Image (cartoon, rainbow, N blue to C red; front, top):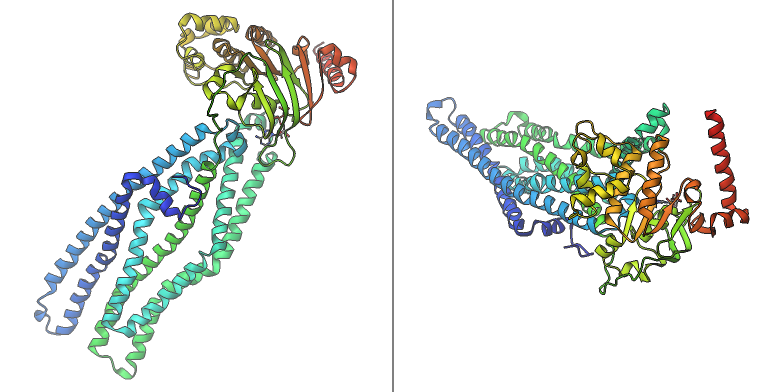
Length: 594
Ligand code: ADP
């Protein structure tokens, strides 16, 4: 289904339809039939007019009016029925395609490295999964059958136009061909590129909007406006600029297109005047002229459809390219022969990792290690690569150079489940689901007994939280006004990690807590969690790592220095200056409090 070389967006879409593919083809056949049926009522209407003119002024001789009227109604009904059938078939298949595409994307995303959504941008991923797939639904369910109709109707029309009077036929054909030419002018490779850019700017706006919404607390706290979110503002401006440019590019073609499709009357009347010059109006010319006058509005609607059809086919190509941009990302490779780590020592050896769009690597030739049950701290300025290093240990993404081993085994050779059981990651911004506290803990160990849950919560210093909640551990978070503070959330997340009992724990220390009491409890909970585990801790406050077995000071993705707290102070390097800064910040705070 996902071969690299795809013949066309349509056949790629049909791959997703599975057994429903035939329905799409059937709907196309029915649509083609409606293309001819659509003209029939007009033919019968014209017959009525023709008869009336021919028998005039003896109208009583017009005996076929009722028959022709009935036939016009009958063909209208048949048209409606067949069109309904065509749309029903196309919808059944289109929903299947959109559904299967979404499923495929989500299955694929589940296999991708955890770091993928961060790198691509969650707004962009959301837009592709929901909107790109839905646009294929509109295309297959509506545009495709309409497209077939829009092709068959003009062909049938041209045939008819030439049967009655080729001169009038030709007069109608001139605007049709000119309008077609304008449509193609708006459809070239340049326009495909514009469509891609248009979707890109929409995507980037969606990404930035998500970031903006996430940042609303900051905006409010600091009394900022949308203008402080430069990237969001820029993405809106870019979108606006692009739309203007795009509109100007299409302006002349679009105006000419509209002019041509509405000009059929002008050509017809001009020709009729020419043919009847000098008062030579014959009944034949009049009757034929009326035939073409009746048909001309159909030309306009049909051409409009052709116009939107071309725009939609550009959209569909773009949607497929976007869906494939996710499907083409390689999932984390699973080793054929999975190995089990023998021990909980961690080693990062000569590792380099560069995020897709960045010129500089986030970590560069990085080496660090931790023995079993040691506490290793990663410190360093913001952006020095601490989070990236920690993410590589838990295989949020794979190293590009070097290796990461746990218990002597490369993480790429450890089975996915085994690795999950070996490593616990406590995020700074703990993710708790809107479920009960017990259920949130059971994510780590689905078959945990109630007692184990209680013990883990107790060890993580959560007793006060549980007591406060109306239904204890069964309270659903986020319901009935049950919200936890940042520190409380992190304690629950620690309880979850304690329950998991993973031999390796990666801790991203939270930077700020609302109150000191919470901070003390979180520290105690950390201590419980770090018993009997190898801990890699991303430390933001130096006070918490004074007793660490090893401290790695990172700078620009490299280890600037390493050692124990006292050793590093003696070196008088980066750590020592960070420590001094930290001390003066503390005394400043104390002074301020006094
Ligand atoms: P730290 O945790 O020390 O603050 P990070 O590991 O988060 O540092 O970042 C290291 C470098 O990688 C920084 O330059 C940062 O801008 C970049 N970086 C981090 N995450 C991403 C990402 N998802 N996409 C692109 N660049 C990233």
